[in-house]
Each structure stands twice: as C-alpha cells, then as structure tokens.
Image 1 (cartoon, one colour):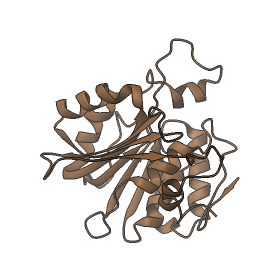
Image 2 (cartoon, rainbow, N blue to C red; image 1 turned 90 degrees about the horizontal axis):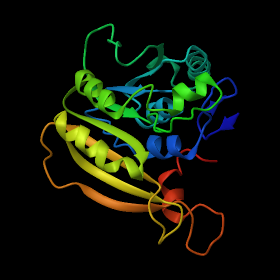
Image 3 (cartoon, rainbow, N blue to C red; image 1 turned 180 degrees about the vertical axis):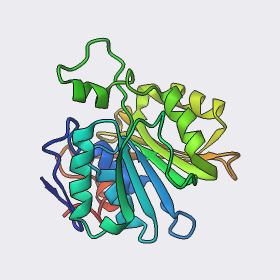
Image 4 (tube, one colour; image 1 turned 90 degrees about the vertical axis):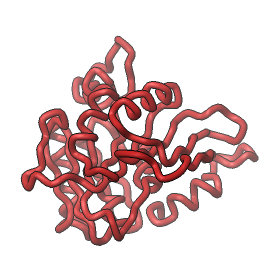
Length: 237
C-alpha cells in the first residue's frame, strides 16, 4: 500500500508495482487544465498515473486501460476510494482494439509502456505482459496513440534511454513532433537511465525543451534531489 497526499494505491494484486517511472511520468506529463478535458492512460496497472493526472486536472476525465484483468480490478478499487472517482474509468482492454464508447478522441495520452526486449521472460505471465515489448511494441503504441488522439493533442511517455532513437523514429513516422524531453539520471554526471518524452500530434510550434533530472543529490546521499522533490511535491508525503 502506497499513501500519497490525496490518494492511496494498493498494488498487491498487480504484477507491476508502484515505481519511480510511474511517479515521474504522472508528475511530469504536461497538464493543461484549460485544454485537457480527456486523458487516456495506456497500461494503467494499479491506476497510479491515472490518479495522479486526475489530481492535477480537476476538470478532466481520465480513462485507464490495461490487458490484465487483475490489474484493472485493483485500479478500479484504487479509483473508487479516491477523491476523483467520478472522473475516473478503468477498462480491461487491449489498446490495439480499444475504442472509446463515445467515439471521441482524447486530448492527451500517457503511457509507462512495456520496455524489455530480452528473450528470457520473467516467470510470471502477468509480469511478462506488463514488462515486455512482445506484448506491445513501440511501433504499435504510436500507431494506436495516433488513432486515439486528437490533432494537436499530446502524448507523454517514459522509456529506457537506450530506446530513445527507436521511439523518436516511430514518433516521426506516425506524425508526432517532440516538444519536451527530460533525461533522468540517478546522480549528476551519470548517463541517463530513462527518458521522459512528450510529443504533439502534428507540427510542433517550437523546438523541443530539453533538460536533465537527477533523482539523487550530488553529495552521494540517498535523499531525493531538489529537482525530483520539487517535481513530486504535490504527491509524496
């Protein structure tokens, strides 16, 4: 059980547990309270990112989808006991076949996608589905993000640094333009471990904003860095 400032997450029934990647994306993804009225979270798991965006966007409806029934049930329970329950919907669906009931396109899409490509999968089938690109490739992810997103809408995701070239290629092929990139490092001076990326569907109005986020301070302590603490201050206790 993880207790945040405005909600709690029970991930005991989920193959993929609450982790730094999800918290980073939920806090970092651009949230425009004026123009963002509908959000889709692809691979919602326990519902963490969906709940974070519901907190940040008090006028938006948020849909979380996942292919794992147990994860969706957990996400529904977490949503039901949150202050945002009326604006959250958790759906058990494969994004490759998912179609919103009202047929409307989303203003924003977020995803902490499966990213492992090793041939040896973990023993748990549910964990394998959650962690491996065999379940959902970056190519398929961008195809369906394009299908479900309105023109000019934003798509934010977190990926391994090693996948940056592949992800940028799939984005360009599907008509997305990079607007923002944050390279996540464990400590200053270390190579990035993750990339937070935000795209717009269509042409970008300006060059992308690029920066670096260290998770820990340079002094070697295990505390959160000032930048990480500032980013997540509305969520962590």
